[in-house]
Every structure is written in C-alpha cells, then in structure tokens.
Length: 261
View 1 (cartoon, rainbow, N blue to C red):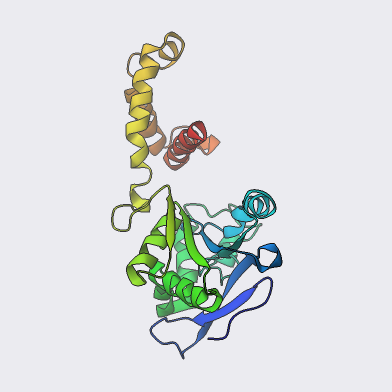
View 2: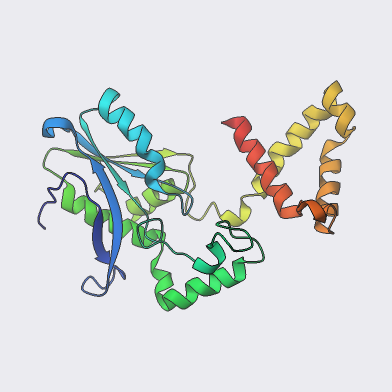
C-alpha cells in the first residue's frame, strides 16, 4: 500500500464489511500529530472507550505530550466506527434539542431511537463492532507504519477491549500495548455496570454507619435505607422531581466515580 504522507488525516475510507474489501466503503475519522522533523521513534494509537466515547478527549493530553515530555512520538487517534465523525450512529428526532430530553435520550425515547438506527442501517448495523474496529486499525497501521518505528497501542476502558481484540485478530503487529482500566472481552458487559458499584456502596454504607455524623442521618443500616429508597422511587415516589430509580442509580455510580477520580 502507498504510505500516507499528509500531516493530519481527516477521513479515511475502509470497507463497511471487513470481509468484503472491495464492497461499500465507510468513512472513518483519524487524526495524527507528527513529531517535529520526522524524528519519531514510535507511533502511539490512542483508543478511547465508552463504547461511544469520542477520541476528542485525548486532544489536550496529546498537545502536552507532543510539545513537552514526548516530542519524539507520532500520535494517532482512531475514532471508532459509529462514533462522532466516523459515521455516528444517531437518531435525529430523539436527539433534537426540542425533543423531550433535548440532546439527551430519555428512557421513553430509547425504543424509537433504536428503531430509527435499525431503519437507517438494517443488517449493516452488525458491521459496527469491536472486531470491525480492529480491522480498521490494522489497515491504518499498515498504511502509516515506517521501518524502524515501533507501534504502540494505548486503550482506556472499552479502549482496552479494542486493543485486546486487535491483539487476537492481529498478533505480533503491535510492539507494545498499554491497557488502562481493563475491560476484558467476555468478562465485562455494560449490563453489569450498575451492579458492580454495589459492593463499593455497601462498604461505604458500613463506614457511614460507624461514623457519628453520617450514621445520624442514614441510621444503623444505610445500605438498607438506600435500597428502600430505590424501591420507593421505582414505585413513583417523588415523581414530580423526576427522581426515578434510573436517575438514583446513575447518580450513585457517578458519585463513586467522582470520589475516586
């Protein structure tokens, strides 16, 4: 393949179906920041998580490393197919600012949103997978790799799933892999996400019970009180405030993430 020589890639076309390289093409978004003077010793591919998280979050980090601590590295960000400029999977009606939840999709809007995406893509929706993303990455590494320059993958959260899937499909291509906040394929699912906060909240509840201030507010068994509140919210308690069980659960997990950041 011809080497890509542009300073900053914007859109790159890959097969919608990786098993049909000559079939319909899908534009995906890639950006890169090259080491000054072509003196790079390695190229690092940054893989964002989510699923659905945008690689834009790496912008400030790249600028700091590129200009400071690691100027001898070429930095690449591959936007996962179906995300952002890489043909984002969207439901315009439910995400319209004038819709029920504005740009956010409410629980009531999700069924229609899913149907809108299925209507747009049909069977091709099955092409927006971690495996297809691995093939996209392999093609791009093949286009950009230079002799003597190491290839390093960095994945965060679901980005580690992307990196691990790449290693399964293309062993030996990457010289090094960094896994940050590991989500192992087959061992981690979004459907388990909320329940995985339960052990942490249970431990914090025990700490709360032993604390004079916290215990005075939540009683001798804060865990039971929290679960009782969740049950009330599920039955419509405080519906005027929009404080349903889903909001309570997501707020609890967000508080845990903020406390550990």
